[in-house]
Image 1 (cartoon, one colour):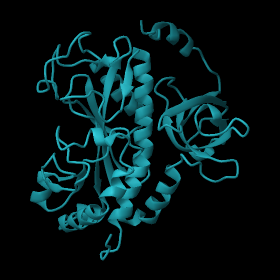
Image 2 (spheres, rainbow, N blue to C red):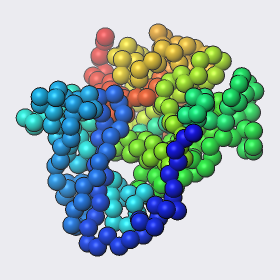
Image 3 (cartoon, rainbow, N blue to C red):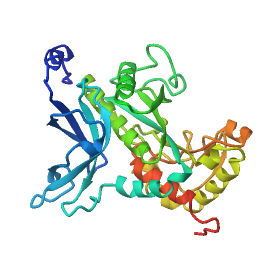
Image 4 (tube, helix red, strand yellow):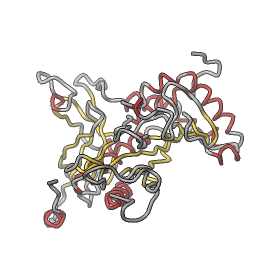
Length: 359
């Protein structure tokens, strides 16, 4: 049986006065694209991440160092309110560094920020649609699925309402409100095509903020699901067979694309994307070949395509963008388990290649 938290008992302790002390949860990304965290007590209320001290952790226990030289440094970079402890307590996302001050090999934020800073004048905006599936640890099946056999085929679950169609709405609502409290720029949620599958959207975020906000939204979802005793999967194909996979559709625009006549800039960017399809696929998530099959609203992993309102293409130009002649495009190739820093970095790199770029 799953071990659930006891919120009533916990509240007895969380309601105790903590004096002038503040608890800060340091969050970082491990070697397996997962999240880790630990808590530090400080004696002031931080207003920004740069006010917080550098810390370290045992990298030999996270796949990020050898036991004989195990310290990995963590540098706070992005501050959020803590929805679990409340009050003045904080969550802080951190970058990882080696002892000589160089970025750790698993620190993709460092190079991403350099690219974002280089092209900051273009005001690159992102919006990422994070799909995920909830699993019951007792059955090892998606939450709400029958213990034996399968539920009815896809069709009635997407954006559905009602018992027998939605499983886990309490987790979705708890996550949504916790993100709003934390200051995450979460813009919406919906039930997805497969039962037990959901999506939340983060953005629009400019530059490096996209990766920061998505990672903290993931952290909050893991913590919320922990309270409910449910497991979160962001595998691109959580259930084999005739079931939709899970993606991280990435919407992108520059200031030029958002202005009158911006469709031309969108089309120029898409042409450059077509020339670097393999470079993008390389950082668009592990096991993405199981998802990008040309079925279940995806394009094929070995082919590049684009179209207006086409959810079976690599790149979709929304219909209203085609009509208005400005806006953004949606890259539908990224898998649900992407590192958003790697994806946003390569999209900006490709977009700002010279006009005469040839592969």
